[in-house]
Image 1 (cartoon, rainbow, N blue to C red):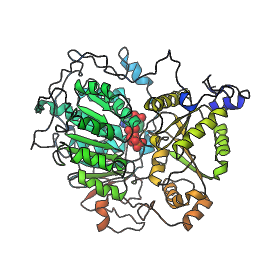
Image 2 (spheres, helix red, strand yellow):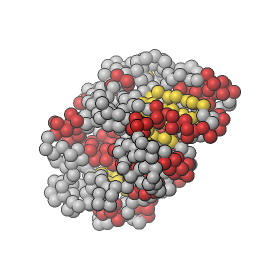
Image 3 (spheres, rainbow, N blue to C red):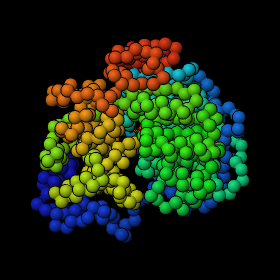
Image 4 (cartoon, helix red, strand yellow):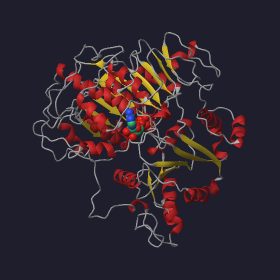
Length: 601
Ligand SMILES: Nc1ncnc2c1ncn2[C@@H]1O[C@H](COP(=O)(O)OP(=O)(O)OP(=O)(O)O)[C@@H](O)[C@H]1O
């Protein structure tokens, strides 16, 4: 039987080595920024790169919608098999001179590698009861299997390689909507497969559209991507890039990533080799646009992941610059997809500027947390937090699955707080590392690698790690400091309980967090969690501040519908010709459309 690192903490001799890191002991304190680095002879593992490949991407041309052309390249509506007519390009962009790296690493024995991947053991039933609502005109019908959509054989093969047997609810609904060429604002719970939901239609659409391509102007050093995927953090952009490369393997669609904190020259070289899908963080993209190394004039697809974050005050000016003030085709001439697990009304209103005749899709209640996560809230005074955390870590005997160690992610509010807690954990024999915005990109990536591998199974993080990161085996998320905004809490705890797996989230609450009490208590009730009596009392006393969640248990959905429907705790989505409700469990008052089942049948 394997023991957890918590056991090894208990068993370790005082001052002795804990976990797997022989460099961490009380007697040999190593400053945080030097910790967890591999020996200099051991180069950090880098994601597969095209850097060493020879030039030349024998592509059949740059896709792109000609000015004035239809933005709907796929057939509209639903029923039966969706798709058809895409350009069935054989092989990947390695045809010709450049060899495409196999992101699955399964060149020798594909079938065996399929069987060994992470997605075995996903609890598909966990999604059966999730209510789904769509609104907008002529909403394409959802599909029940990937085979219902003609995504193309190369992409289908990659879906099999990823061991995606069935589409998740958000995929069932979002993919046909996007394949039909419609703009989309989609809200679905953390860990429910949104990345594939926007990547599949983009890849399939580029494959399909490449036979009708219009060549970009002849500007040798300028890249003309057809799709742009923006995300708020560097790590998330890297993760989306890695995923998109898997999905696009041997489809002929080339994916490149550009993000800050990493040398720009390598990214420029990647772009020069050709790019169909550019995954980027906004700051680095603005830099590339200003250097005239990227043009957005051929963009057919724009996806904003964590869209509410991308449109909040911090990022909005950059996003407006990229989307509205450069050379990107306007709404209606491109297809725009916005995805997040949370979508405050005011952000929905803002987002409407970027969309044209869009469909709103909500899988589960907007901003809700998945009930796969057991949520606990404990009253802990500031001065007791560290010892309380230590108790939790000692008590945590949970081992991960597939022989992997269970990981614990601890969120704190400040970068200084992250450094200090990491230091304290390490000197107390807990193998921890930290990630925050003041660390160099190399340090951030190293911290994530060390955490993912289980070398340091505790990661202390600021909100830089709150959104989107998909780290297997995160068993426990601890909100050492609670955030001020309930949506941030939803994203943070969403680092566990992903893809049908269960997880645990513990929050330390005290008098400094009373403004969150009401929304936290509501959120927990919604997710069928036990709300401590003391929290209900604090919540009853507090008034809703900025964390008001829409005035009713099922409030805050498509903001376009709010004016014409009654609110106040009742279901205000009882039907009507604007939207569809797909519901297996009641509570949203909708009914199945013919042939529609609730979730992952
Ligand atoms: N159809 C599927 N079958 C099995 N696993 C899937 C499927 N779709 C996605 N996954 C897996 O589910 C996990 C979560 O997916 P993803 O990261 O896209 O979630 P998300 O909805 O974007 O979460 P977040 O809101 O936190 O960003 C990933 O490990 C992914 O590989």
